[in-house]
Image (cartoon, rainbow, N blue to C red; front, side, top):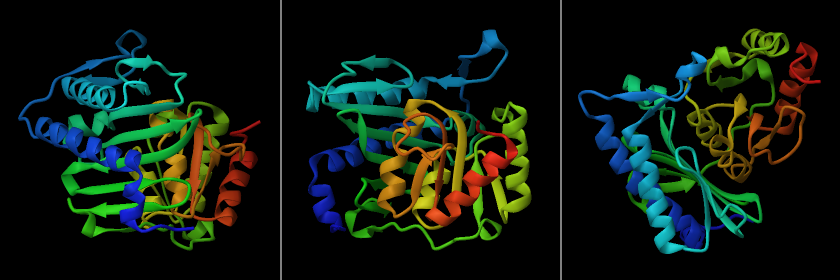
Length: 278
């Protein structure tokens, strides 16, 4: 049963998550506007490119310090500084800049990701983009889209009623991650079948599915800090979220979000037919 936004943020964890995202977002927005940004490459030895900036680290340090001060018994899992007390009843999962490549390129599609696990299950997810004052925050019951800085601007998010893949707007990160014959065949089939496939906006695609602007978001090889936010948001907006085999509530790996069971099954069928899954 849906709740009002005031009731939803009456949940202290939801209110705190939004507070955290806005604080970290302000810090990161200032860094984003710097004339030059430097990055280290976490995959240099493997000849890949996985950048990390000083802003990534500063953002996670801020989030960790605020959580430790407010909830000293809670665990934390973060992209940059790993896990501490990860077997606690409540565990926060953090990605201070999801989309660091976009951040480096000056594109406003990067986001702050904050999830909360309870007993190992994601119960709260938040995707925040400070430059465009856009947030989606959700649990399995309700998802809210927040425009501007005040709660008065918030409204419930709801997926739109797209039931045919031929009418769907879809998004995924980068084609280079589709690194097997089956995965490449699936991506090519999606590009032929869907109305449009957009690339490289990371978690923002899932936020836009929840907000009713897109219909499908899918990825392969997501880490836990990328994926933990997604299930509460998509389900809270009335959508469907699973791994590529149709299993519910994946926290990492190969995932898909869509607007309806009918559309979801069409994409899963395409995956099977392409040989992307066993």
